[in-house]
Image 1: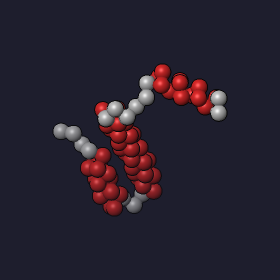
Image 2: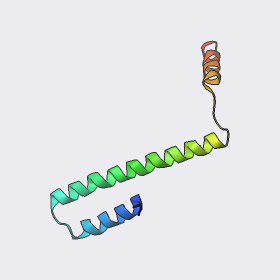
Image 3: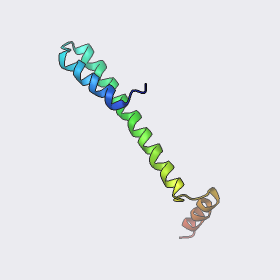
Image 4: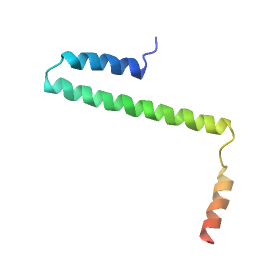
Length: 73
């Protein structure tokens, strides 16, 4: 069974609603930020893969050629 970031976030929100201790709230905040970072990272990777599959990329040689044109401007 795969646990999604959304499911983890929902459980953490439910937990924090009943937790009054400041240390628990701080730990929750750290976990929530980590989940968001991982989720954003995964989304960025998925978007990049879609662009590559669609042919929206440059080869190393193309990038180097483009950089050379910048120097002459």
